[in-house]
Image (cartoon, rainbow, N blue to C red; front, top):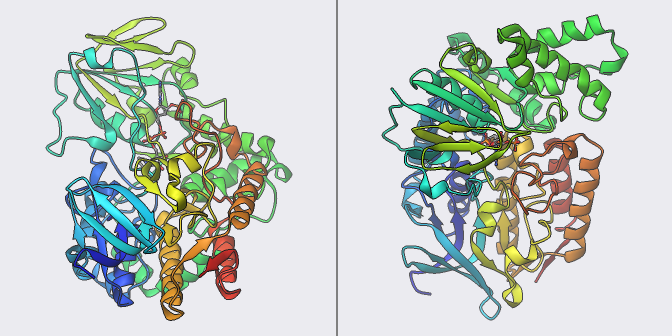
Length: 532
Ligand code: N01
């Protein structure tokens, strides 16, 4: 074999790619890894907009597989800001000596399966081509940004930015009239920061967000010490939980409590500043719309308590979808921002943005002159990063054709017709409905075990059966239909991208259940896979 052959190719250097590369190297495989960015970090490399912060608690949003990594790293804040998470991943990469396996600033353009050699041939935008037995995608769920195709966008005379491609040197909005389109997690975080500097900020909101004040603060020394001392208990509890974040769900339904009792429960949970403690506090909140309405109204009461103008408070209050069907955003001073004199809200629900003009944004109602437009308009999530690569399996079938009507996977980790390919955090896995680092550890460890098994039995190919993939995908949809997820026009279902098939792209049954299913598949000799 020439130097350009490896046992495995890993795409991506976020949490998943870094850990996967480490595991495979540890198992004695040769690994060639590629990353489009200049260093590790994945989503935490690209999303450098002001206010970017994780919506999981810092200590929980970290690897648990290595006692050394846990011991040697100290988080500073309860909710870590982007620079701190990026520093953490640099620390992990250095500690695991992982960068030597990577070509950075290198985007994988294609990966083609060759039937004769039973190898993947992987080509990049820098002209490299390598072959590998295993192809492992760790391309992330939120790495393909989406900017709506507003007519006239190219005419705009000012500056345009997408939150996920922020200039690394930053931008000074002083004296500028700035428009932000989008009020999801990115918008809710960037809006208060821009408002501090802009001469005037106009927020273009299509759907209001259910947002939780994240109550961020420095971690105490005791919290840091307690977490490290109790790490084994944390691991057990997080693995037993559906979201990878332990919470104490009550044993009574929301509708079986009086309004007074519910309010007391919600108030207590609100003060914990942790979304999972709210959405999972009663068992029926996410299966029964009437129960959900009780917590939705509680969130709205919090908006009314902060926003001084009652009409504005109402305009900022979500009414059309259940709480949690779109991701709950975590904010710092978001609703307070609307009390500022230099901030205005434009609802584009009924009067949509029609065009971007040379001077600003034109809606069905009016035109807004602007010096800069910030697109906080999100991502072609979960499938976008994979479908952007020209991946071809058996008989030259392209993944993007195979998934034209919606993704089909087995366990979210494998696709029939694409042998020896593993899709970490792929569609049909619990991915973004969990503390994703917890899900990533499960995916990586399961994949590494599968690879070890395949090597030990000298297998040539490992492939999901079509029936298993069909069944898994159908069950995932059925399961989602028992929840309120389908009622939100969210990126969870592809509804945010015009023309994208609308289907839930996550396994909603819980990471704990998913882990058991995966372990059972392994115990039964990789049931649902063909090993040849
Ligand atoms: O993207 P989004 P995001 N006209 O899709 C609006 C993670 N994340 O980047 O809701 C007008 O949630 C769109 O409106 P609507 C996190 O998992 C995490 O904010 O479709 N508006 C919506 O308001 C998150 O969920 C963190 O009606 C248009 C917004 O743009 C995920 O990334 C921080 C429009 C897009 O919101 C994505 O969040 C940041 C149009 N034509 C991100 N098109 C944390 O950890 C779209 N919109 C805290």
